[in-house]
Amino acid sequence: MLQINKKTFLSNLSLLLRIAKKNTSQLAIVAKANAYGHGIIPIISIIKESEDVAMVCVKDPDEALMVRNAGWDKSLLIFAYECSHNFLHFASSQNCSITAFSLESAVKIREFVDTTNKSITVHIEIESGMNRLGVKEADIEKICKILSNRFISVHGAYSHCYDNRRACTKNMREQCNYFNQRTEKIFSHFPFIKRHILASGGIDLPFFYDYLRIGSLIYGLWKSEEQMQRLILTSPFMKDLQQVLQWSTTVLHLHTVNPGEHIGYGYETIFDKKKKVAIVPVGYSDGYIKLIQKNDHGKVLINGTYCRLIAINMNFTIIDVTDLFKISIGDTVWLTHPEHQLITLSQMGYGINSEGIVIAAGIKESIPRMVI
Image (cartoon, rainbow, N blue to C red; front, top):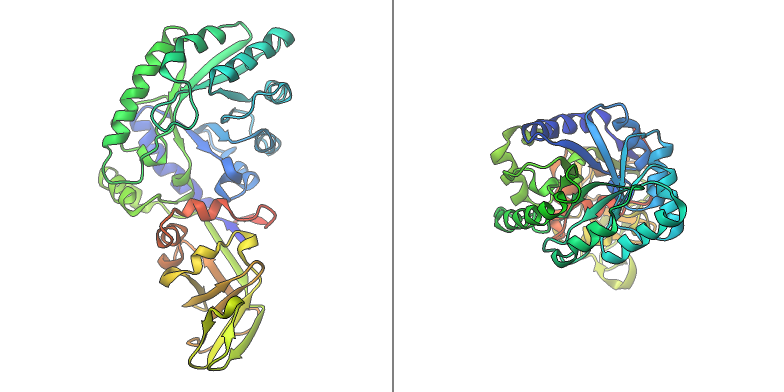
């Protein structure tokens, strides 16, 4: 079962609002990738009650429709997506902002409004060093001229910070300066645009933008220990940030494995002493990725005791419960929980040289989410 703690989410929101208000920014919440695995519908059910969130950002029209159907009627931005006629018609009809991320995408947007006379709202994505998507400096004047049309409202300009995990912020500062220079050119065409580049990894930087675009931190997930230490140094109250999601399952089966016997696929695990193992009905097809089982970071919590993972299969996970004094079929098994440090998503992410959001975003969408 996946549980989303509403009180914790709102507490995180309050902490981040303190930073946004200090920077005179509005909060934009990133709900892409099914709200980083937390579930778009439960997350929107929480934030639609708040007057402090100005915009929601998603990755595609399917997610945008879920957000609208969940009751969000304020600003909604779809990040870069193929600008087909059907997509643009959808965005216009659902009052979604879209992204002009290249000259080609801008041309398609212009052709759409010229042929339909339908209004559409656009944010221009600026290439500022990541070299993924975004309008390059040489094309800024061209794209502004293409988008100058009475049916096109250019509402914003944004980019993505790409070096936000480390203690050193030099690269992010340079990127923000680069972004500022590029957006000055856009202001000459569209003087009222709202800018946003700072996301969870850069909220401590001394730059002021119209939106503070928050993804991982609203869900209580740190990108790295260095990022956590850096942000708490500048905003000590951020130490109260807490993971929103908790994921549990139950013991399906218990049995004993004798010395010399192997367990799981490929004869990879052979015990030299008798072991008691538990089987739970969650595997990597559910998003509980195999990397978690590697090294000592692969643990779960059963009856208050950390237990080592032996193997994560497609549908099942095998756990060493030899040291548990008492365990029964049906007992709760915590895969991740905010109150137990070794199985927080952030700590699990560090253990596989990654981030907690990589684990969270991969959790299977069909698993029910419950707001508690």
